[in-house]
Length: 100
Image (cartoon, rainbow, N blue to C red; front, side):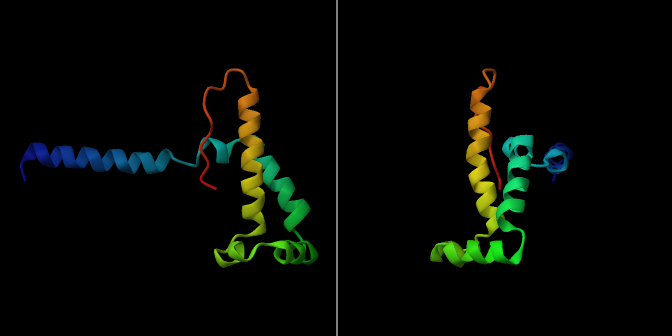
């Protein structure tokens, strides 16, 4: 491998490595709206044996098959509230991404 190719290869690897270091999460996931909503929903609907039993009792069968949890349900529902909140801000020109 030539010197130029080796330098190019090292630069690409370095760029990929740096990208992983600075990526903490998506704009939607790390927004305060999403964080607060998910925490409140978890405390209200998922914490405690009785609440979890109610969630799993009312859960659709296919959600159980894929391992959908109460917290996953909170995050999903809060995602839509967060998107709505982002769109209410006049300066927001994008819909945030979520990794949930």
